[in-house]
Every structure is written in C-alpha cells, then in structure tokens.
Length: 269
Ligand SMILES: C[S@@+](CC[C@H](N)C(=O)[O-])C[C@H]1O[C@@H](n2cnc3c(N)ncnc32)[C@H](O)[C@@H]1O
Image 1 (tube, rainbow, N blue to C red):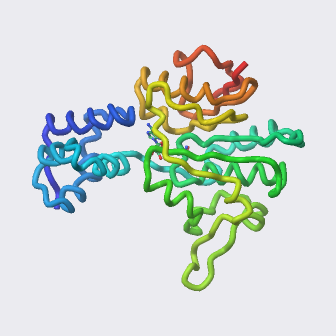
Image 2 (cartoon, rainbow, N blue to C red; image 1 turned 90 degrees about the vertical axis):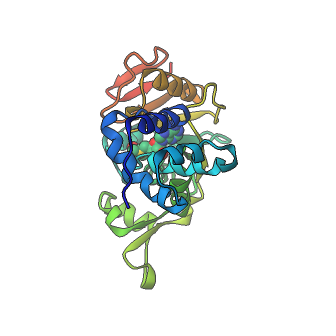
Image 3 (spheres, helix red, strand yellow; image 1 turned 135 degrees about the vertical axis):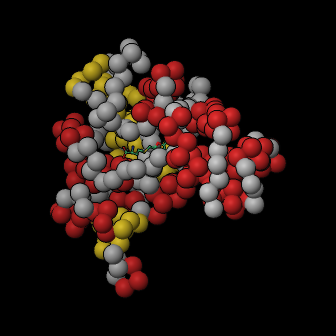
C-alpha cells in the first residue's frame, strides 16, 4: 500500500531525521521517504504520516526512531570503492610496526562493512594477517552493522576484489551458502563494529587513529553538520594521521586544522 505525504508531514519527518542524524533531505526526496517508510506505516497499522510522526516521537516508542533512521539512511557501498584511496593506504602503511604499537584505521560511516574489510585486506597484505593492526567500523544504522559483523556477502559483491585477495581472505560458500562468500575469520578478528552517531556535539573520542575514512556521508550533511562531524573525527586522529573523504566531497571551508595532501586526502599536522 502506498501512502500520500503532504508538505507539513514531510517537513516534520525530515526535520526529525536532520535533528538526529544531521541528514538534510530536500523536497525532491519525498518519494524516497514514502518509498522507505510506507512499510512501517503498514506494519504499525497507521493510515497517515501525521499518525506516524506522533508515534515515532512518543517516548513510549523510542525504538521506532531507530527503525526510521535505519530506513532513511542511504547505505550504498562496495568493496574497493574509489580504489585510489586503497592505493594511497598501501603507500603510507609503514613496513613494520614498532613493538607494542598498533596501526589503527577507522571506517567512520561503515555501512555493511565493505569499506572496513577492504582496508583489512590491504593491511593484512602489508602487515600480515597476524600483524599489529586494528580496524573500527561505525555507523548510525544498527541494521547495516549486523550485516557488517557477519562479514557475509553475495558473490556478486566480490566483483571488485582482486583475485589474490579473494583467494587469500574470503571463503567461498558451498551447498546452501553457494553464491556467497565470508570474510575469513583471521581478518574479521582485527575488525570491530560499533553503533555511533557522528552528529553529536562533542562526540566521545574513539581512540587515536592513523587513518580515518569518512567517505560518501558528508554529501548528506549541510555545512554546520559537516563542521561538527569533522571536528569530532579530528579529535581521534593522530598527529600526522590522514582523513580521507569521498571523491565528490571536500573539506574546503569545513576545517582549517587539516592540510590537503591531494584531492580528498587530508593530514593532521
Ligand atoms: C553511502 S554510505 C557510505 C559507506 C562507505 N563509507 C562508502 O563510501 O562506501 C553512508 C553511510 O553513512 C551512514 N550515516 C549517515 N548519517 C550518519 C551519522 N550521523 N552518523 C554515522 N553514520 C551515518 C549511513 O547509515 C550509511 O551507512
């Protein structure tokens, strides 16, 4: 069943999404909103978006906010997306890690984990599967993180993974798992996933990272949100560490703390 949304309803719901996640939906996204939320209205037995807004903002239904954010985020991702960034990573990973040190990379809008596991393949290749490296993947959406933790994907999604990596780090599904692959446990044990909203003023420091990937999420934010999110991440970036954004994104006018190394790649002095 499809439900009509009027301007007031769209403004209220998109305002709620903006307040929580920092995501700005233009009026052109009405169809996207109704396409994604109509199944919730129907599951809850509601007839209008006005009723849904009342429901989702009722503290008694706090869980519904989580469903709403999960449905309204765009989670498109794939392995080795924007491959130049992984070539860059290969160049900057040190040949060896000092005893007691750990090389840390953060995939800060991780979606279903393809980016985090791509980084893992590069680090395992450079530093060894038993090496001292760790990856943190975070996302606001709970449902994508469940997928990321499983590390289990359709074979079609392996298309961009280089064959040697595929052979070394992925297990091909057999029988009822045919047509799928699983990221090898040896890699998965270096990668942790945590739910985290980047749009929180003074967000907690997540650690000290050598590299942070913040790719293909700034495009959903307005300037004040970008500034807040980037300031949050810079706190967890080591001095000399790199922040990498997506190819259609830039930190021009967003921060003056970082130095541009090359388009989309920034360094903390
Ligand atoms: C298009 S995906 C990008 C995935 C990956 N970084 C890549 O480039 O392939 C954007 C992700 O950002 C997440 N996201 C959106 N707003 C967020 C926020 N405020 N905090 C954390 N994650 C957020 C979404 O849930 C989504 O999974």
